[in-house]
Picture 1 (cartoon, rainbow, N blue to C red):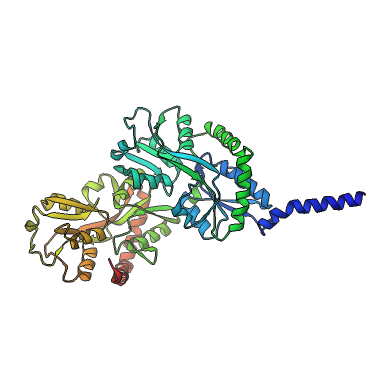
Picture 2 (tube, rainbow, N blue to C red):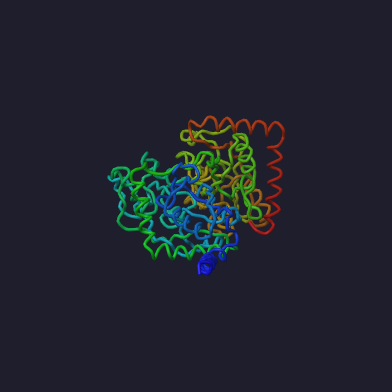
Amino acid sequence: MNKFFCLFAILLLGVALLPACSKDGNKGKPLIVACEASTSPYCYYTGQEGEPVAGVDIDLIKLIGKELGRPIQYKIVPFQQIFTLVAMGKADIGAAGVTITPQRAERVLFSTVYDVSSQVIVVPKGSSLASEEDLKTARVAAQEGTSDLTLLRERIKPRIVLPFLTQEDVNTALIDRRADAAVMDRMQAELLVKATGDTFRILEKPLTKDQYGLLFNKKDTKLAEAANTVIDKFKRAGTLQNSRNKHINVLSALPTGAKVQEEVKPFVVCLETSFAPFVFVDNNRLVGVDIEMAEAIAAELKRPLQIKVVPFTEVIPLVLTGAADMGASGISITPERKEFVLFSNSYENGIRRILVSEESKFENLDDLSNRFIGAKKGTTNSDFAVNNLHAREVFHYDNATQGIIGLLNHEIDAFVDDESEADLAAGKYIGKIRMMNVAIPAEEYGFAFKIGNDELKAAADKVIAEKRANGDLQAMFRRNNTRFKAIESNGL
């Protein structure tokens, strides 16, 4: 009888364990979790050895690991790197209060929804900002790589967008008054308000509703299915609400955010992608002189490189606020800009050109008076068009491609551009557009740093001097000009 009972118990135990084993054939193998540690209460930094993060997402992942019989190993990284690690198969799960969107679902596999929240606007308590519309004249912060930042850029479109690497950086920008407002998850906003003694307030009308999910590699459907089973139990048993309440109580007694470990902080370079040969795209990769120089400067500093792709108008504001270490994209060194940022030594002289229709009779700058002139927004070319050409109206384009199309379609009479781009356009559209033969003073290009970052400037100046002395810098321009001309054969 006892032997039968023991055998029966063993069989029952085997049946009980069978579902977990069948869901994942990697029992005992560490479950690699990529997470960003400042998305309270979903994932925040504790500093404890072995379990450096805690939060709602971590509670859920622990249950998944227990269900599968797999220990957890954490990779704490900047938010945008979570998607890359999961998509490349270098992490099994991604977590950090991640909003499920169709665009993200093209790269990764999402779990079922485990929580729902909303995006809100946070402002200082005495601020006159009272609505989404009011933000259009403000400086507004959001975390890099999040749906908050996408919403800010594509829907709200404030005067200045301030992307920051972590949610803690966003909170600090609000506290320091470097930002007039911020967009964030409601629970993060409530924690900020509570932790700062009601220094801030949340605008009453939410911007949108968010659904949160965990991330998996698209091929790892078995792991996703096992996680979905755990998520269903997590919600039905009331564990989700208990977890949320527990972490909100813990976080209420802590500072405004959680720190990302110093060793994962890269050398952050922000740039705009449509300024060949400095920065452009080839086979879905960012290439160009500025990319190669940024890699060399990062190597000199012994720091990993992280590229932030932003509109040109955001490059200097990001450097100014400390959200990026260096600004690039062939930035002209001007007395006005030097009042706000620290420039490296010049690494190239920039020549300004003016493109016009081939059939036009424009020969000198006076001929452009009272005409419609185009330029890329935020550039010194735009300043030149406004201040020197006496235009009837200046049209500001997001990039050179749009401006040249505007010229071809006769929306504008002339387009002011840098020589590298203007030369490529004139060569491509022979018989349609040409460069005016007028003398315009040259400019110098440099890399931008926050004032006081002398160490970064010194590293950049050293790299520039060495690359110029050994001929590498000149070779970079030749190589990237040739590369861009080759890919331009299929369209500008």
